Amino acid sequence: MLEGALGAKGVNIVNAIHLARQRGIQVNRTRVEGGQGAGDLLEVRVATSSKAVTVAGTMLGEDHPRVVRIDDFRINVEPRGVFLVLRNRDVPGVIGRVGTLLGNAGINIAEYHQARLSAGGEALAAVCVDAPLPPPVIASLGAMAEVRSVAQVAFG
Image (tube, rainbow, N blue to C red; front, side, top):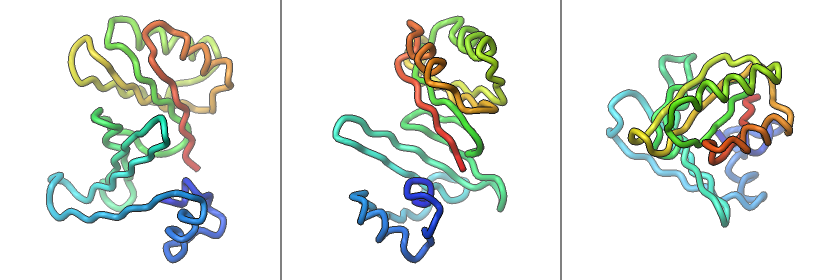
C-alpha cells in the first residue's frame, strides 16, 4: 500500500514503514478480526491539515483488487489506470454532462460508478478513463455547477 505513496523504487515490505516515517508520513496499523463479512478489508486514511479522505479496498480472489469505499460512499472500482473522483450534487443530468464534457475532450470513459448517501444529497462518482486528463479538462469539470470537487488518481 505504501509503495504507491512512496514510489516503487527501493520500497519493500521490510522498509516501507521506515521510509514513510522519514518523509513525515504517520503510519498506524490496526488489525480488527471479523467485521466486514467478505474477505479482508484494508482501510487507508490520508489526512492533511485541511482535508482527510478514507479509502477502503479488498481482494476478490487472488488477482482482483477492488476499491470498495471512499469515505462513506460504497463503490466497486478496480485500482488500475486512471480514474477521476468527483463529488457532486445528486441531481438529474450530472452523469450526462460529465460524459459529454469528457467525450468532447476526446477522453474515453471505461467505467462510471456513481454512489450516493441519500436521494438529492451529495454523490460521489469514480470515473475510470483511458488516459490522464489535461489540467484544462479537470478545471472544466470543477467549474460545473453540480460538481463540488474533482481529483484525478493514477495507479501505476
